[in-house]
Amino acid sequence: MMKIDFSGLDASVPLCGNTDELCNEISTEQKFELPTAADFDGFQREAVQMVKPAKGTTTLAFIFKEGVMVAADSRASMGGYISSQTVKKIIEINPYMLGTMAGGAADCQFWHRNLGVKCRLHELANKRRISVTGASKLLANILYSYRGMGLSVGTMIAGWDETGPGLYYVDSEGGRLKGTRFSVGSGSPYAYGILDSGYRFDMSVEEGAELARRAIYHATFRDGASGGVATVYHVGPNGWKKLSGDDVGELHYLYYPVEPASVEQEMTEVSGL
Amino acid sequence: MTKQQANWSPYDNNGGTCVAVAGTDYCVIAADTRMSSGYNILTRDYSKIIQLADKSVLASSGFQADVRALQKVLAAKHLQYQHQHNKQMSCPAMAQLLSNTLYYKRFFPYYAFNVLGGLDHEGKGCVFTYDAVGSYERVGYSSQGSGSTLITPFLDNQLKSPSPLLLPARDAVTPLSESEAIDLVKTCFASATERDIYTGDKLEILVLNASGIRREYMELRKD
Image (cartoon, rainbow over all chains, first blue to last red):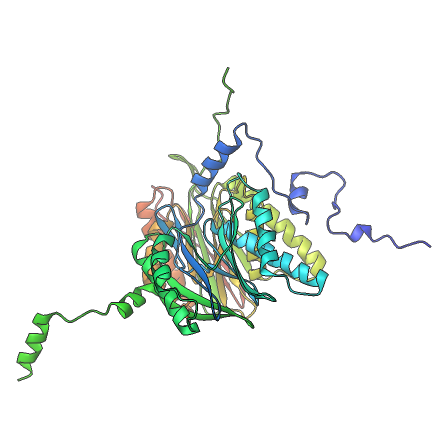
């Protein structure tokens, strides 16, 4: 039986007979073009220095009795210049999985969006949600294949699947670690100090959120490349929920309110007579 | 014998500054028209702004050859979109398209610092700011290019609105009227021209609102 030929409607078929550079760029099947330089690594180093992609950050996540707590700051720096104080570093991959952003902002944004697409395709193909293990493996495999090419991604995939809460650390070197407590970014040493000393498995949601918020605050206090707004998300059995977003400048005065100086107190007492 | 290497860079910086400000029902996009290379001025009358769709305008500074190539790619993709979907691309859709286009050249970047301005589905002004490899963010105002370090602190002082990340959310719309925003942008460039050698000659301003698009010019110092 003759079948109707729909091949012409296929979006990836070139529209013109002779393909040229512009045609390749605008066709739907896009690939990563590589420069034909003699010294690829040197060129990448120079290009990255010149382009100065935005990075510098503090992110953290931990598993506890009530699920997963995820928190991050919101500053992006380009060299010494603060390019933004309002970056969304906690990326909502789907309603029950979150990814954090540390390293190159464009790298993290693009590959998390790509991961979200792959997770959705998995759901459609298998009629069930993808596990956190599976999602983190998909991302880790992609990043491993680009290993050595200069991608800078330090991310945590946090979610709740059939096996309960899940947390994985994935980076652009190809590393993938399962764990219960992670902090990533230039401010992570400071965040670990607060997180490790205050952590208990059987915290309530409010206690966990307060620990996460404090850890981000202290990292922004000491690390110049972290700052802006401290956001805290909680992932529970019904998905994630944003718990708070507080300006760290205001958090400072909340945690360390200004004491009126003793001289001023004397003055007010005298004038009260 | 050591390998011979090319002493040639595929990039150059043609300077210039772009600014965009979003309002409740308008968007102002502006850029200077000076194109330079090192200490030379190549021309005083080069437009860095292009209208990609009826509600999206792109302004880019950096290497103008890469900017021109990027503009062509986006215009071609927009035309394909119109053929396939029988409608114009919205500004947020164009914003993501630009991000993906920039990222696909992650290993040989477009040396272009972009600001995309336009109106969203509700008719509110929106501005998207980018780095050279595609990371983007919707903001109330933005500046990119050689004069951005001079202009952004001034805009922060005049326009800074509560961060969209705060919870409970606070309204982040620029309270300025359209004419006030245009005056503000003119002030920005007049000041940036004083202290940045790559910014000057003439200012091109595009204003997008419900009634359409309007273009205005202002003379800047030519020294």
